[in-house]
Image (cartoon, rainbow, N blue to C red; front, side, top):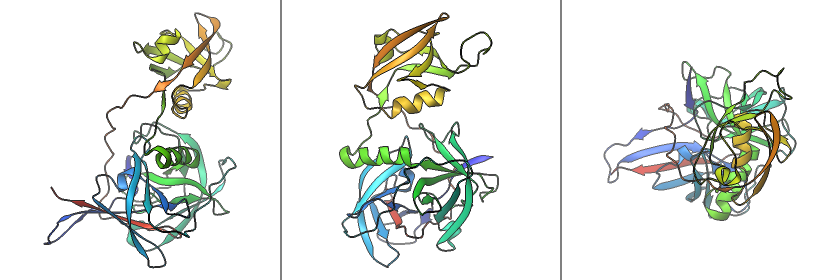
Length: 320
């Protein structure tokens, strides 16, 4: 199956003074004074952004910041008195009710119902930092950037990706969880960018024989980058990271997510296994260097987006 971003409408304009491409997407209002969260690819390379609300009002929006690594962005309209969508504070669980909001295939505002099928999904090859919620609520082209909410109407994620052979829903949809959304949103609003911690190692989930060691979990260090925080701390190739700050590193993604959510200059206390003996290493994170963006997956065409209680976003790309 092929991963698809669940929205992205490309319109090739007819004869006009300014021909261009128009991306239609939706977003989630997160503050009374006009901040809106959406997917980064919805507004990618946009010259103009127009937000339409359910009461008929429209407003130009400006980009506050984008984070392609998580495919999240924050834009702002010059309006007040908006009603933000509350974030769920309690952890979600597999089996919880889930409602996906959007405008699938442009048929109109739609809510679909399902459950949380899984959490912590990684390895989709969509974003650099993946920690997706999986749901079987029908997510079709037109839902991306919209809200995934619980039975109480509280936000649990931002709908982003579907797996599909046909381009339609097959009951395998993915949303960015609110923990990541909130971290990225706050950083973009405050600084216009996301600054992440960096260790400077290459790792893999440790698949060793649990009968030979005290634990079957841990992450093996495959390479240590010269002059990186890991190198400065004395971390070595072959070390197995068992815990960081007493949090068990069950697999590589757990370590990546934990470090990425810490700001630079944070000191970590790592418990490692080195040549069969336990050791403790203190590591001071540095800022993650800029890296080449991932190639985006195939994007479906002829799609539109909207959403109940959500703004519609129109991003115009002028032709060069």
